[in-house]
Length: 345
Image (cartoon, rainbow, N blue to C red; front, side, top):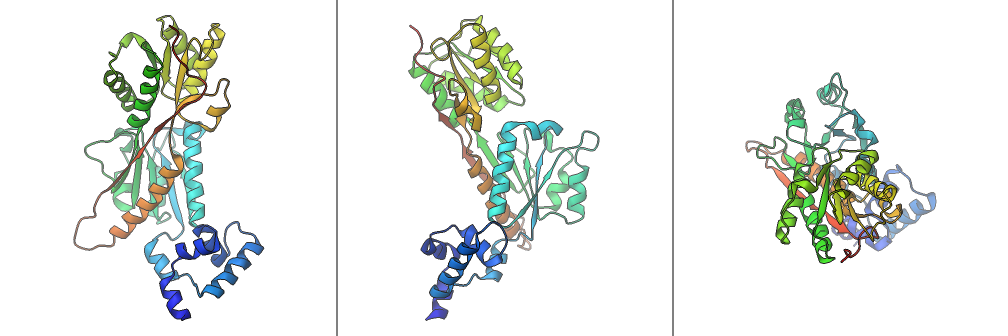
């Protein structure tokens, strides 16, 4: 009977019985990672009681990771100071830790942009790579990495000749459409837009949303950030001269700048100006007023990237046939907070 139980029960079923995550079960058996001695002993005792033992060989077959994957941002050495990308890196690191995988963050060097990553791949120091890219052009120089190592690219753009086997598309259209819909419902008609860096996809989605809800895009109501809080302060000043009643910003940092800029000019948010950001940073709910934003499910992106990387590694074992391409879309969503309200009649 015990042998039958061991064959039939997998780690997910066992974790549900014990009331812990699969990651916690893995840590209990491996002895690695953060787990209390009391919890570990309880899990091992339950395993003995239910006749459960993790199938190590099956686990290795289903997860080809031997230990380390790389995370690489393609758009500049300042990226580590970007709040959104810091939060995304944290989620990917957390997802790796839950699976017993080490994460190697590779920062682009201004003098030799991709040398470190290429050296790691050449030395077999990485099992796979997750690349966060802002454009097709930012993958220039990474052709050998993509050819020689299982690679997942994460981007909010889609291009026709994507060279990677795995691609995760971050769709801002869904969240932006929801935000514009709510602003129009609240009576806003002069909706401005503060542009950011590499924002063409977001900008197109904004214009498409306006047209969908019966508003004609007005180039006069567009201002360039492009990235700092100070840029947001300046840009909102330009738009307020053009009598906007709401502003959508390409990032939360620009939106925080817009909040501050409006206040300096004596305007009350949201009573006189509604403001929406993008990224839904952890600090968005802490501003005054709290910032409405386009939410990005970073934990879902992280989980999808690791699952896809495993799929790519499994597919690469097939002989004779070209490896299939994997693609997954992660939708954004609108998070309504106190920085928007009905337009003044």
